[in-house]
Amino acid sequence: MRGPRRDAPPGFRGRGPREDPAHRRAQEIVKNTGLPYEAARQVATGKADLNELLKRMAFRDEVQTLITRHGLNRALATQVVLGQADLEQVLSRRRIEEHLTANRERAVLEEHQASGKELTLGLHGHRSVRVRIKAVERYEVVVHDIEANAEQRIHKLQIKYAYAPDDHKKVRKAMDYDKARRDQQIDPIARPQDRYACSDRRLGVALDRKLHVTAVTLEGECFTGEIAWVSRYEFAIRTRSGGEVVVFRHALVELREPG
Image 1 (spheres, rainbow, N blue to C red):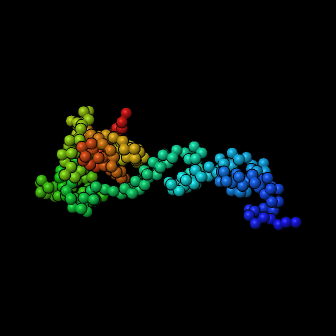
Image 2: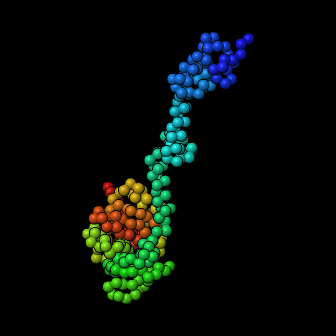
Image 3: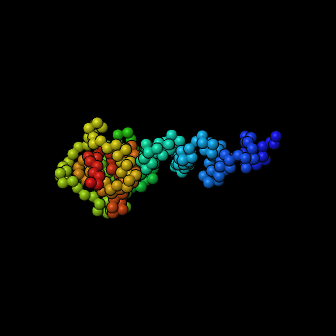
């Protein structure tokens, strides 16, 4: 009895190719579809359906492509291919989470204390002061008032917004007023549970989608533009005129979105 052919696949113990139609058919399937030989032989012998095997192979390839291209874990990639999860939503959620994590502790007062640069603060009572930040304490900030040439302490809840003095014209040009609040002087809201609820998720979605939003303060100042960054206690808006203004979340009374 002759042994297996030298060019036969591993485990093949049948007769030569002229005497084994299943082997020839399996080789044709491998050549035409890229299926592994053992799977192709199952098709050739009628033990498996070719279309079903091709679907499975395509499915595995799609899953692996998502894993490689986007860094998804296999379970999530599988959900996307099955249509149980939306890829863009998955990627958007991940971008938002990464941004919030990276900017969580960002704070404009501490940044300007460290840099020594001037900062304009919008305060309750429709006042604004140009200052240098000397110290940032738990509840108050110690500043040097540039125009008054004097040091003063300001409670953090008094600060509604802030921007770099170089952006003064751009910010003032972009600032509008809510008519119902423009002439009112409103005290800061001391209790967090009484303040306007604006979640990280909502701000993050607006940032990721580059939506033009309007932030309205307790005393009616309105700033419209794209959100530039979001942190625990504040967020920045890049106005249409090109300036950047930081809005303190404790001073927010409304966030308006398109439509």
